[in-house]
Every structure is written in structure tokens, then in C-alpha cells.
Image (cartoon, rainbow, N blue to C red; front, side):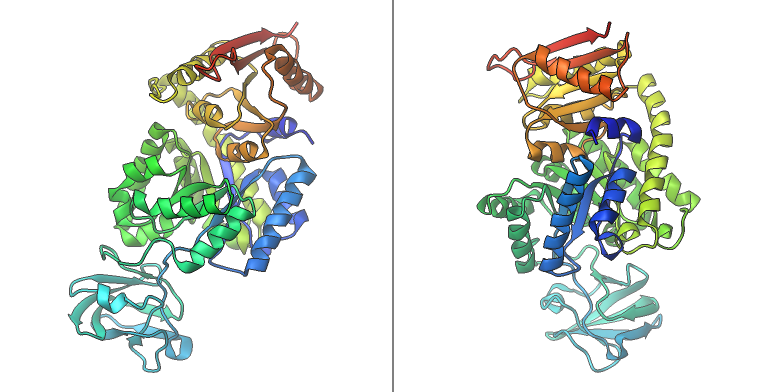
Length: 482
């Protein structure tokens, strides 16, 4: 199956990231999800063994080969996620006004005495600090501190269970962004040839450098996705965007670490800044949460996906919906349907108020050429906008313009093809790169005609280069079929 043919049939420009889990581990399941619209598969290292992760990488690659469609792999590093230790009876009922104590260690035998997986928790807590448990449903406040314990009063009650997450809004933790387990997983993933590595609980741009070094030492080519889920990350967002290759707005922990009422506003700001910087941005967490157990989402969830697309997200992510949900394929199909419906509105908005051209000081000629080519393709109502790219940078530049012309990113590099799986509106298409623009154009037109997607009178815009060292892309070719 031609990836170009598949892209035309698929229709949506927004990319879909789906988490692999027990509900969709087999090759046949993955093939079905690719055909339904998945562009990137996520492997969450917080769950499962190394053997399971490796098997999923191999199955994804096999599914991609079977469909003939490039698909990227994102490995998600767990990061320094703090969890409760073992509770007596596995759960405890927190009652407003009562006091509980955090002690050192990882297991408790006395109800109301809590432990955690972070051995410095007692050291890092101070009187007045907030402690959020059970995804923010239970709220505590530190009222007393000693050398070996932190006494907390229950502000908002509820049931807590062993191994649930612990969030500390505003607490400056001394734990590094990369745990020893993360380092091991990152080295494995880089050596396995995955395309993206996401780093959890990023606090500053400096957190990304150690991960980039691990990737290089392992001989990998993975790009780094910075997950924004800490208030420090929001404060340092511009420098983090500059240092990262892509951004993920991880609204689960973010909605506990900051005031949940601020999450929509923060999401819009991060998307805007990512687009201005030319970086892909993913919106994640609870996008179609009810489809764990339902064949259709709530109206609020459908609206949430649509608003993320209207805000300018390059991709929307599914987590438990596909990993452990009852209807993984139907969930992907639903997200695709919402994207198609929303993009029709987005196209109208773009026609009325397109962002102004922004020059790239590092690549001014390429940036100007791609902008002009996109504008020309729209004005001529071109059927295809084609760019041959070695690294994918030019395709990303076009993606950020949000042109509603089918954009084909040609490359002979499997790495580049899979990177383009995260670029809004770009279809990766494997093809030999050549300085012979006529040959490239004829090859594209021939395959598109064979797929029934180009006809007499249709126009094709191709971005090429003269071969001069000043720029790889400094020429625009317009062709009309006769």
C-alpha cells in the first residue's frame, strides 16, 4: 500500500499518538490502528518489562512494513515519579481534619503512617507545603516537621491506595530528572532505534542535556520530547522549548501540580510558543478518557480534542484508551473523525487570519522559500505540495504554516520519514533524493496518477534546490498536468 494513497484516504492533518499496551500489542492489532490513523506509537516504560518493550518495538516495525506506512515510535521515560509505599491493607481513608505522617522507608504497618518511593521526601518537605494524593483528589498540608517525619493535616479527604502518585505543588525537589532506571531505558531505546524519547517532569532546559548525551553515546538518533507537567517547567517554558525537539503537554500531573483552572490557559500558551519556535507539540492525557469502556466519547471530550487542534496542536495523544481500553481501534477512529471535522473550521480561520511570516535567522533562504511555496500552492489551488528533505527540517517549516494543501515529504532516510510522522499535515513518502528536479517531479506525478489522485489540469508545487551551498531549498517549481 502506498503511503501517499493511504494519506489521501485518511484525510486528517493532525497526527495521532497511541499508547501500546495489552489491548493492542499484536501485529494485527497494530496494523488495524495504523489503518485507522495512528502516526506514532508510544511505549510507556513506567509499565512492563524490557522484554515486553523490545517486543513492542519489533511488532510496531513489522506492522509498519506490512502496511507500507512509516510509523514512529516514542518511548516515554517514567522520570522521578513519586509514589506512596505499601499501605496496611493496601488502602487508607483520609478524613478532613485528621493528621497523617510521612515517614522514611517504603512500607508502613500502622494506618495513617505513610511512606513513599522517594527517600528524601521528609527532607524536602517544609511546614506549609501541600501534598496531593490520588491524582489530586486528596489534599494534605504539612503542619509539623521533625528530622524523621512530616506531619500533615488532611484538607480534602478521600481514599488513598498503595503505589498511587504523590504530587508536591511548589516544592523544590532535589531529585534529578533522570533516574537510574530512566538512564538504562534511554540507552536501550536509543540503541533500539526509536524515533522519540520523552523526558518526564522536566523543570529546566538543563534537564535535557544528560538525556541527549545518553542518546549520542548509544549511537541513537532519537529526538527529545520535553513533557511539561511541573510548575517550574511552565516558568521556564521558552528555554525548554528552545532546547527540546518537541513538546508534550502532559495534563495529568500538570493539572495536579498547578491550579487545574489554569491548565487550559497554560495549554494554549505552550502551543502558541511551540508553534512560534517551529517545534511540534503534543497534547496528552484524558482526551477520550471515557472510551476506556464506551464506544463513544462524552461531548466534553470531543470538544477537548477539537479545541486542542484549533489551538494549533500538531498531535493528540491517547494513553490508557488504546493501551488497556476496550475499544482501541474505535477510539483512534473517533479521534480521526473529530480531527477531520475540526480541520474544516481551522482552514476557514487560517484563510481569514494567517500568521505573519517569521524569518529563521539560521535558515533564512529556506524559510522564505517554503513560505512562498506554501502561499503559491494555496493561491493556485494546487493538489500537492512536494518537498524533498534529508533531515525533515523543511517539511517541519511547511507544517508550521498550516497550509491546507496536501504536503508530501520525500526522503530516502527511514529516520527522517518517521520524524515526519509527528509533523502536522505532512505525509512521509519514501523516495530516492536527487538533484534532478524533473525526475523527482515525474516520479511523484506518476505515482499520484496511478493512485487516482492527480488528473488533467491539477497543479503540483515542488520545493527544490539549485545545488548551491547557500541553501538546500531555494527554488520553486510549478507544474500543471496536461
